Amino acid sequence: MIKNIDKYCKDNNIKLTPVRLKVLELLQNEKCGLGAYRILDLLRDAGFNSQPPVAYRALDFLVEHGFVHKIESQNSFVACTDPGAHHSPVFMICKKCDSVSEAPASATASDLSEALMATGFKVEQTIIEAEGVCSTCADT
Image (cartoon, rainbow, N blue to C red; front, side, top):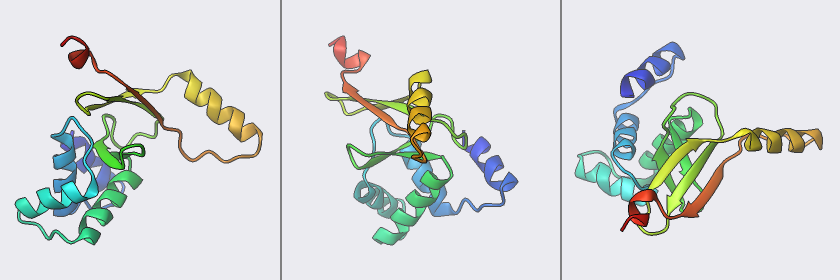
């Protein structure tokens, strides 16, 4: 996946700095969302500058370019499963293990966006978060 992101950055003349790349790798290695302060701790452990602006600038860049999503209900971040593509994901958040999975939104999200736009509201992003129990936890 990093190879695709690197190509996207080169094609769009944007820079994937070492800190941005490390934050992306940290998120890709997690099943759960990571908060900014946990990312700061992991950056420090990896030998990077661990000042809050470093993590926030990296996260802002990664979210802006569609490599990472923010899980609003948890104030955390997860790596995108389809980086660089504009889409409206559905996040499945397990109440037992805190894992976060991404799935493509059905036509419902598109219908919602179209209905809102018909009222004159400019939809910039539609994200659906569903909380429940993942299949792994449900089996235990």
